[in-house]
Image 1: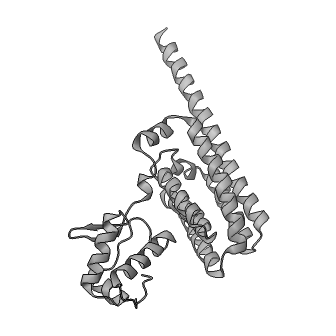
Image 2: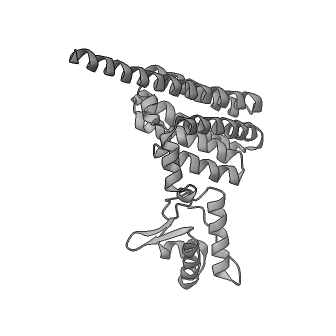
Image 3: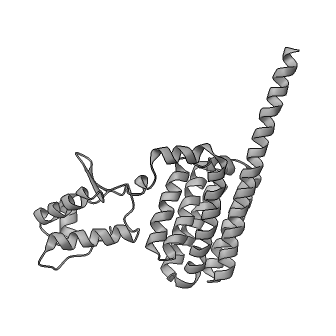
Length: 255
């Protein structure tokens, strides 16, 4: 865990500040489990009472979640970004689905452009590591793993752009995607041709980033999300046609 020893008169405040920054910068993520109280106190170089004071404050603000017998976890702040009624509304209308993709195209295109210029070599090593995992999952034909790594790849690019507001906004967006609010990504990864196309698109994004080409990075992201939009349109059309065909078949059997 990325904790540093603290030297300060107000130890609890220093602990709070360090944890806040780790969450703000996306280093500590929602659901991450912190080390045990004893271990964490040692890593930070503070007393356990000072640590407890800090944890209590952070928990009262929803940043940490202390669970009896389980430990201390980073809170799920992103889950509260939208009300359940609004999420249900999103899920019921295709308009929201395609606006979601348009929103991602704009924001992620900008993030890729920024990442190509502003990221460190370590940032790009993280992006490369996730892409390497994507290639392995593709070879194993594991749609669930590919869908998960797809989200991690895109979030790694956003992290590399070093804009914390964009990072947390897009984390909320991807959490909704994981929960199937907009569409089921695993369906796309179950189709061999589509899977191959998606991997090639992610490779193009990664290559542009590794070569620090902001224009190519943005164009690759936009082309990828254009493909996703077209694939969803085709799937929706096919689903509607199948429904009509079944209705016709039912009608024929009754004649």
